[in-house]
Amino acid sequence: MSLWKKAHELNGNECDIITMYRNPNQPDPGICLNLPLISTNSKYLNLRHKYYQIYRGELGDYKDREGFPPIWKENSMIEKAFFKIRDWVWAFYIESAIKKHNLYDYDVYHFEWGLDFYRDCRFAKELSKRKKPIVCTYHGQDMRTRGVMKELDQISNLNLTSEVDLLYKHPNIEYLFLPYETENYNLIKKVSNQVKVCHSPTNRYYKGSEDIIKICRELEQENIIEFLLIEGKSQDEVVKMKKECDIYIDQIHNRGGWGYGMSSVEALSMGLICMTELVEEYRKFIPDHPFIAIDKGNLKQKIIQLTQNKEMLLHKKKEGKKWVAKYHGIKNVTKALYTHYENFLWNK
Image (cartoon, rainbow, N blue to C red; front, top):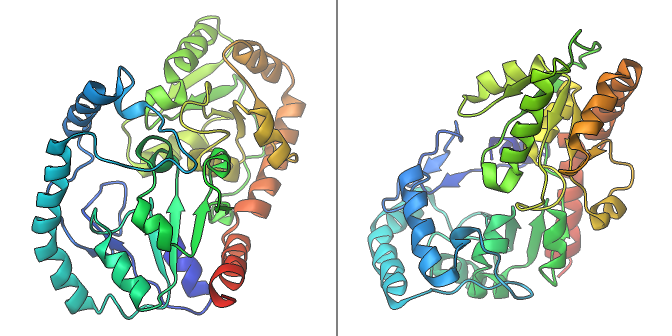
């Protein structure tokens, strides 16, 4: 979020971030509402998953919703009552912040994850009455497993995503590359004597990590690569460990979307070669991508091939660095965002 704030400021505008609660992965919380009854704590997430298993089967919180677009709805009267009570509690925090920070006085509103402050979307509804442009940005699981908030979706002027598969899940959504300050990292113009491979999952299920780790451990035991599993580390530690590597493996199985995520963008910016599973639709969408396409069946052989050709490794490092700057560089992404503003907000 802090990078989006910088992107708007580079374009000569003001931008404020409003967050619902403090998150260790978000160093700048902006205007933080400090709302209760919400968390990214693993115990809370596991409890939520078990609850969803009762109503949605074994996959629980991981099960994709059907629909075009998929639409969120409560699974039970207990869940419905929970959100009503939570909205009532949250109102004391939210309404105070609206008055204190004049939150109705902005020109454009972005709702990350397609979420309003309230589950009943009353804040967005009020903005719509005031003719304020509303933008919803979807990042993946928010649409796949939760579904869009129907009332917010109906009044949104522009929907954005950086996930190619979501283009096939919503009738009115535009693609926007994630912004990144790719120039912050210099290209690593060398290859380690023993090629170093890393994998950095935030969720092992979605990334197919168990299979990736097993294959890489086997290659490490065969003395073909050195493998680094980067997990449970601070951002500074992650960056430091990645910089030591030559190859980054993003995901296989496509459980959490197609293609690649922000961790790959970061790795490409450093000059690492990125490996990920790519469906045919994705290859057609970005045909000039620099990724090494993999799946469970060929991952081991693809890694071995790369270790046997260090000239190719260096070439792919340079190729990836140029590509990520072209598509994810903050100036280029900001330009694309404001083009969407022109097409969907100002000209309506």
